[in-house]
Image (cartoon, rainbow, N blue to C red; front, side, top):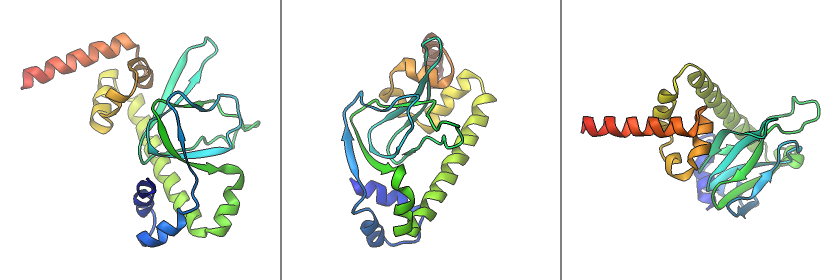
Amino acid sequence: MKDVLIQYMKRFSDLSESELGKLVIDVPVATFKKGTILFHQGEVPDKCYFVLKGCVRLYAVDEKGNENTFNFFTEEQSVTIFNQHAPDKTSPYSLSCLEDCTLVVGDLTTEQETYDMHPVLEIMTRKMIEEDMGAIRDDFSSFISSTPEERYHALMEKRPDLIDRVPQYQLASYLGIKPESLSRIKKRSASHLRIVD
């Protein structure tokens, strides 16, 4: 299973596969059952994750009790809550496993010690974060300038696996629309495909 992590790390390092293999020997990997809450909104996160297998949802509950989904993390994606700017360091989000998950679990409290022991990891991590932040910025820009239908088509193009892996009401929330609107968009898209065929 750690082969997935090694292949991902190769994108950010010139190290050989065997050198990367030595780096990940002591990397902690854990399995979590579907429905597990990795941490709750309002807690101070002390872990970060990398998805080897499964799907993790990032969401928050607003003052009215409504759940709002902000992202889904699947294979070969890192999951970190950047909240060091918050005065109390608490997270505005919760993380839950939508499927049985196998995750690399990083300890944020010993992060610097790990980097001191393996300086190359700090360089790789910085590159990974830069890529993630760039993707988040691009996705956000695209989101605010697009219609719900365009968002759905972008999702179908970039992450079509989510359509079958994620409950429709959560997918609708992620797209910023109501579940019934998502149903209508899917029907229109399906009928358009039939016409094109």
